[in-house]
Image 1 (cartoon, rainbow, N blue to C red):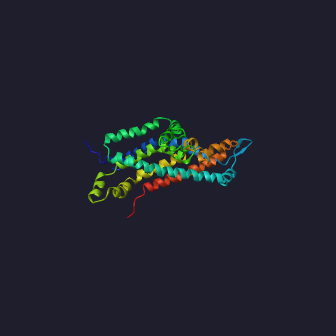
Image 2: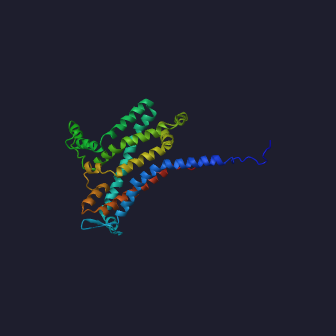
Image 3: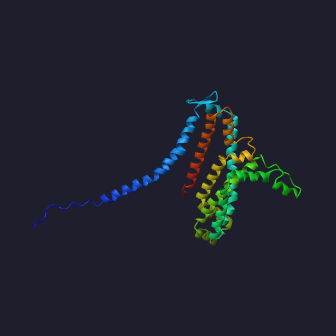
Length: 300
């Protein structure tokens, strides 16, 4: 029996793992395709069309494809646009501050003072308002805040009022809180619940008072969740149309109301697109700035 002198060829040790890793990367890329296609079709493409439409012109109540800066110069040179822009940012910022402040005691109680079962039920109850139409909830506030509504009727028993709460900035803030407060409480609760309790107990053992523990220990550890919740609150308030229209009276208009008014004025869709693009740019700046601040590491 003869034995072959040629050595048997064996695959290199790193060849099979590299091939498997390559297949795994291809599989992961394939899983991302539906999300990429969805974002491309329903976000990037409409956004690109919106930017392109801002350069169109309207002639005889019909849009014509063009590349002119006329709409941008027309809108950005008007005082009413900047008044609406400042009003929208101011109301959204105020709503964010108010909602964040009001939500913190509730979130802190759910995270540190309630059992896990109670916390789950509370979060479920906070989700329930989203099962109903936002417009219906706003109209319920319309009845409550009216001069002959529930609040003024209760104040009348102690000989106070009636107070004007509809068609005011106060009514708008109430509407923004209706939209964002449950979501902010939920996000803050999740953020606080993930804090290592041993760090809080260590602060107490070292003689740190409760309010100082919250400022020096709890808030820094929950910074990411709080900033993300504030960004969500600002974005939802900044782009809301219903609250400033039905509870705020739409005078002066916020940017979403200005878009509708601009469209109604001679079918000026391109000028309305200018307002929408400015809103999108503002929200992108706020969102990316908030994310950068949320995940920025503290330097020694």
